[in-house]
Image 1 (cartoon, rainbow, N blue to C red):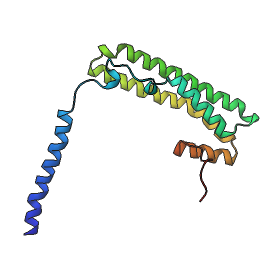
Image 2 (image 1 turned 45 degrees about the vertical axis):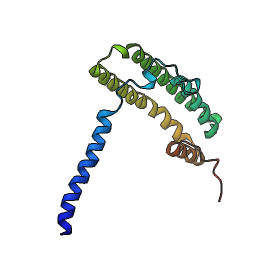
Image 3 (image 1 turned 30 degrees about the vertical axis):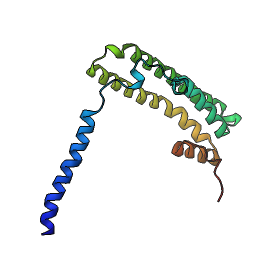
Image 4 (image 1 turned 180 degrees about the horizontal axis):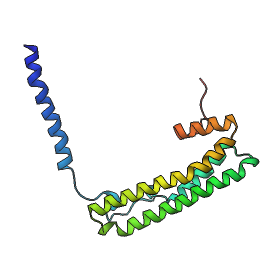
Length: 161
């Protein structure tokens, strides 16, 4: 008897959940997003360029990693690649913003593919100088670097219990 009840209730519940999910998707507002609308963004929400973000990240990393004098050349090589990647990404974003209004769905997908390829190529360029710097680091620097990559924070501001 219980089995028969579950055989009815489960499919009915599944249909209700699926109907709710699909109605959310299909009945959602299809208007362009706020970012694409004609409304002005507030200054607090304004997007920073990849170059600005990269410069801030370089400054944060340099303060956290305690780069030594002997590591300066390796650090410089890494930051040069980071800056080149950021300039490339800003150019790609600018290209998209200029042509996005006239893009169709297929062109949008192709652009996202180009964006993904650009990210992959940037990572390929970034890994060798990063690896060289990482290999030159002390154990303490490596620990800080590993923490930054795992958490986004340098781990030095932890409260001791």
